[in-house]
Image (tube, rainbow, N blue to C red):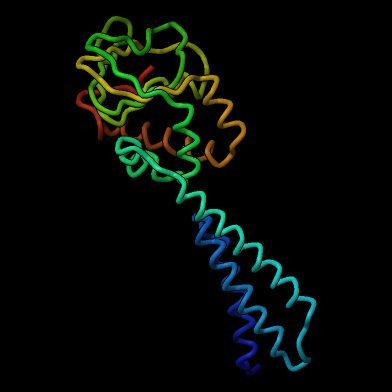
Length: 227
């Protein structure tokens, strides 16, 4: 069967739609959907049977909707302003988040400072929330024994947050620290209301666990959690 130019255009329209399904970036996905719709409009217009106005109309509607959403996304992003510290976190640990999603996460967060000797978690006691070390170092003890340490970028309390229950270790700062704190109730509420943020946060938890297992951001840590 010999393909005509119109046939090629038709296949291209569906191919672009299929490719868009694999994209994670919502802005790029919508842009590719627009291109696919425009190619589809051309295909349905130049068919030998004459212009098929029904698919042309609906493809036009899809194009308008996607253009409208792209404008909205760009306006949302232009309204977002991160501090230098927030931008550093966004470009490293939270790079899998969309800017709007990261902004929502930081709205419920508290930036805190801790002196040397501050206790972030006590073995056998409830953990009040999730902590992320921005700078500094903590020591981890279990059953009265030192089992490791962690530095910048490490999460404290993530296993208790994920699994529930009390802290499995005592975590104490060894130097003055700056960290981000998310109250447990507020963070759970945010993740429950925003499935995309929930998925992205689970990815952060997974990467943090991998770093702890491999020792990428630690000195002597030999445990899989810091709570």
